[in-house]
Amino acid sequence: MPQLVTVRVKRSDGRRIRIWVPILPVVLVFLPVVVLAVLVGAVACLVYRVRVLRALGTSWRVVAALPGIRFDVEQGRTAVLVTIR
Image 1 (cartoon, rainbow, N blue to C red):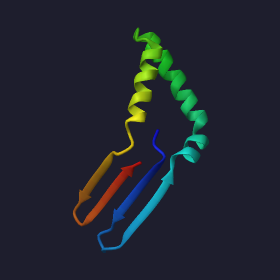
Image 2: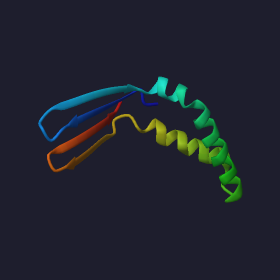
Image 3: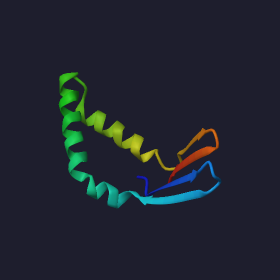
């Protein structure tokens, strides 16, 4: 499971901003929303006749594969780099 998200922003005026976001506190704050999303997903699985446990297992594997992902966006002289560790 990812532990830290680093966001780096290079602004058009040349200044750089770096933000570190720890995942665990964010997950704890949004835990009620996550539980609701899992329940809605389970109902959707039942409606579309998809195995609920298989869908949850696949979702967990996607989350577990996130560390090491880098996401770069550049628009003009502004750039954003998101790194998941």
